[in-house]
Image 1 (cartoon, rainbow, N blue to C red):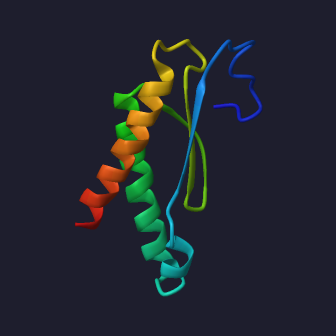
Image 2 (cartoon, rainbow, N blue to C red):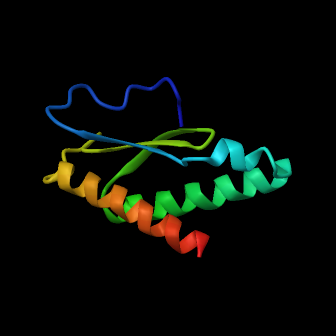
Length: 99
């Protein structure tokens, strides 16, 4: 993928989801680097899978931050609701991962 490629000419309406793992920086300071990478990979892959179920697409991750969009590059009917439902599903998935 070309990181500088324009993903859409014009978008009438879309929803953006930002997720952050609260307390992760403090928690990761007591972990080995490999453990940090494993946790972030596990969470990111889980979020990607959940997002696909709601037509929510990851734009980027930065550390423990996750940014995704619904309605780009193709319009998605009901994108606000799908994005909210996706965010709630992220919370449920994290609870499952942490169980």
